[in-house]
Image 1 (cartoon, one colour):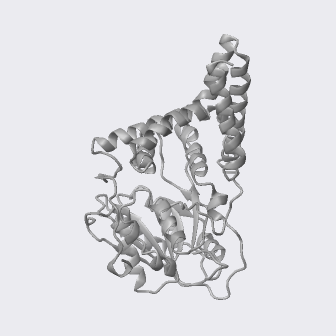
Image 2 (cartoon, rainbow, N blue to C red):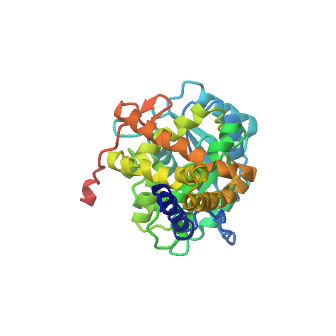
Image 3 (tube, rainbow, N blue to C red):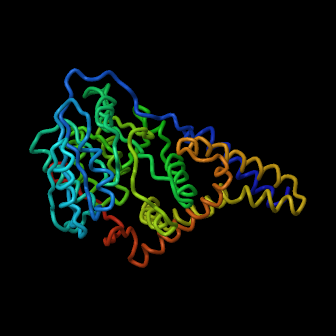
Length: 397
């Protein structure tokens, strides 16, 4: 067998393993579990960190104000040093729409060792603690919720204790309207699920932990036990770090795809999407050049080798490369179809996954380059270095 044929067979083997042994990550059936409504609806504070979100707030904040929640609920929006009037706009929207009570706080620039979002979350949670809520809903300023979203999240969390969840998170349905969004956004969620299979996350006693930062319902007691957000204050991928800490301290977690939660943030061109991915891609590899060195050829083998082997094998009369490359590409395409269906996109986008993966590979390399040039993890005017180990408080040492 030729070298090209061997590479194609190896890629096909990888796809067989991914399809059958990686938690069936490609399935989209992990949706919010429905439970019986509680007799007593617990109190909730919704924490919304916001930095320069004047463009998205008119589409998202009214949906939070209009939540049809039977219990006590209130909203705190943390204006993270916005320069576009985010805080003032939030107050005017609350006055215009009514609904849940809204408070706007402005904590100032983050202290050293904190990312901006987690600094805002810290102050939002500190404000919330004055009201003693049983739950915190951490949701981004670009996330719109259906009127029953909060009710369904709290019901899904269930009672406190072994039968309930300490954390319930939904991957918001991202906007898919432009051509670049159609090409890249469903693949973003597909790749995330491949890294963190939702079924494994949701398995009681499992080791895989992840959350989707746009929508995280967190029990206040679990937040205290996990020292959130202090224990993750430097995390760029804060949602995954949060879930790991909650699971580490004994809390059950749940993650799935959303039906009632949508992102309203547009990514109309490749540049915006590129920056979104490159911001955290190298952080996902723990800023390790060794992991990067393994990831690049690994992505090439899994995603790029099948179409290359099929085309080159057909041109050169290499039957093994043709059938193995074609089978691997077909399997890759088949596993992508459920995600495209979830996003209501044409199945004809499925065979383009190798091209999208090539873009993600380049974004990952660019993320590493930016990091070593001192521009890594840049977002809204701030740049974050690789985190240093976070020491536990004196009581825990």
